Structures are given as structure tokens and as C-alpha cells.
Image 1 (cartoon, one colour):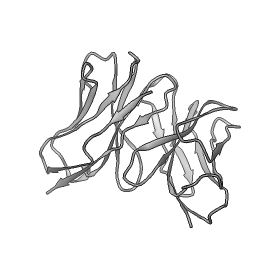
Image 2 (cartoon, helix red, strand yellow):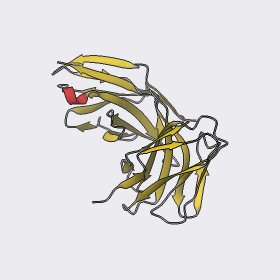
Image 3 (spheres, helix red, strand yellow):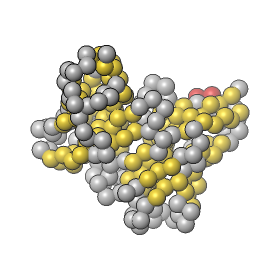
Image 4 (spheres, chains in turn brown, orange):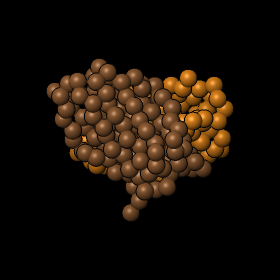
Amino acid sequence: DGGITQSPKYLFRKEGQNVTLSCEQNLNHDAMYWYRQDPGQGLRLIYYSQIVNDFQKGDIAEGYSVSREKKESFPLTVTSAQKNPTAFYLCASSVNDRPDGYTFGSGTRLTVV
Amino acid sequence: AQKITQTQPGMFVQEKEAVTLDCTYDTSDPSYGLFWYKQPSSGEMIFLIYQGSYDQQNATEGRYSLNFQKARKSANLVISASQLGDSAMYFCAMTKGRRALTFGSGTRLQVQP
């Protein structure tokens, strides 16, 4: 079955370390997105990519970096410059011609200690 | 810039009763889409319903309906015949242009037996 795979589900890192969150989709979707969710709050857009080798900053891009070398993959790196990295991270993808065609991954819960 | 406002942090409803979750939005663009998602405690995002700004009729999907009042810029979700499994966070979201979703802060719904 097609879908989005985020790994790992839980991730623990020491303060000051970079960490990369994986997001892979086999839906043949052109667009992919990364969101951050803090407890009891909504999702905020970190980065998005409409096509391979191109991506744009979202509303809270500082301290994060991404790459889009393949259509299927959109990894997110949380760098040491991110002040409060502990959060729930959701990856999503969408189809160009279907406004309701968003698919979300199951998320990665990152805890920095 | 787009903005979504959900003014109800938490709601209670008795099983089998209907409940309305409020959502207002702000945009100057005539073309946009409105979404509702359900997020259970597992963290996954479950798509419920979509309304396009040019749609003439209010969207319905099973027990879910969207009360779309364009002049008031509101897109309230109505859940009929609530079930215990409806207890979750509910998010209103909006998209236009770049197609990345903008989310509200959410409403936590608790269904009581």
C-alpha cells in the first residue's frame, strides 16, 4: 500500500547534536512538507518542496535544513542552532491536482536531553 | 498572510449528541481550500472533510458536515451522533497558492458516555 514512512518514531538526542529525520513516500506525489507540533498546539510549517532539487522555507525554518534529491525522499535535519528542538515532527505530501490530496506520515517524536 | 482561528481549546459532548467545532479564517484571496483533520492521541492526522471556496454546497462526509459561511469567513465542523471514538484533537486548516496547509491551534473534543 502507498503511504508515507517516517522514521524513527521516537528519537532522543543530546543537546548540541544535529539529527536527521527521515521521510519517504511511495505515492508519486510531487510536493512534500515538514511540520512541527508542540504539545497542545497546531502544526507549523518548517519547509516544503514542490519538485525535486527545489525547496522553500516555511514559517519556522530557522535551525532546520532539508534536501530533495529524490522525489520519494525529503529528510529534515534539526541542527544545533534550533533553540527548542523537542517536538513532534510530521511529514506530509500532496498531489498537484487534488486539493484534498494530502497524506501525512505517522510522525517522529524528538526529545533533546 | 493566511490565519486560522479556533477559539475553543476544549469541548465536551454527550455520546450520540451533535457538536459544532468553530473555525474562522482570514484571507484576501478569492480562491482557497478549507480542511478539517482529526488527531487522536497516537498523533496521526486523519483527513475528515474539505471545502473549496467556490463550492456552492456545504461539504458532507458521513457524520461530518462543514458549515461554510463565506461572508463571515467561518468553516465550522459539525459532528452528528458523537461516538466515544470521536474523542481527539480537531484541527481546521487552509490552503491557497503554494498548497502548504496553515493550521489553527486545535480543539480537544471529549465525548462522554
